[in-house]
Length: 161
Image 1: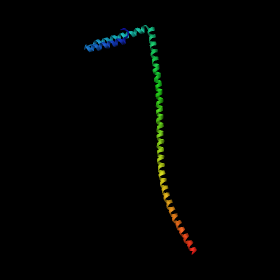
Image 2 (image 1 turned 45 degrees about the vertical axis):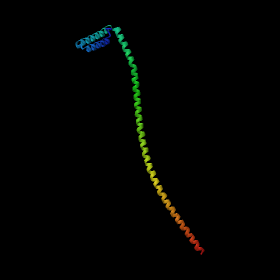
Image 3 (image 1 turned 90 degrees about the horizontal axis):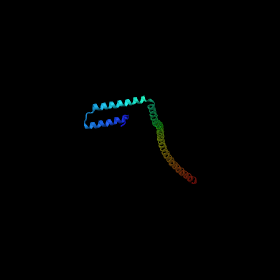
Image 4 (image 1 turned 180 degrees about the horizontal axis):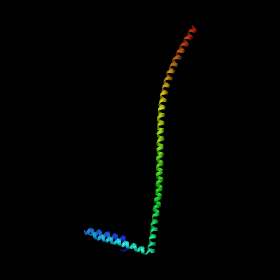
């Protein structure tokens, strides 16, 4: 194990502590001292790194550039996702508004249809009344015509006599 690989040291220590726990060993004081030691070694390595500045600084800069490049792609994807999400939300709101307008227009058409049905019903009733009146008039005309014919026939008979 590399003594500068502090993350591996911590992981190995945790595995060892788990094994001691499994064996029932009281390791509290020991584990605190081991963790303090690893923390100290890690802090010392950081100090040594800053002392040998040029090489370590260049490594840190390169690491920072690499991490920034790694962040650029998700940042771009995140930006695009926000744009797409915003457009989708706007489209949703537009459709919701359009649906509301269509529902209002449908309600208006249904009201007009209902009014038209009432008017048509009234017109059919009026038409039926007109038919009845026409039929009565035709019957009266027929009766009047027969009376006229009878009167003409009687007149002719009187003239002939």
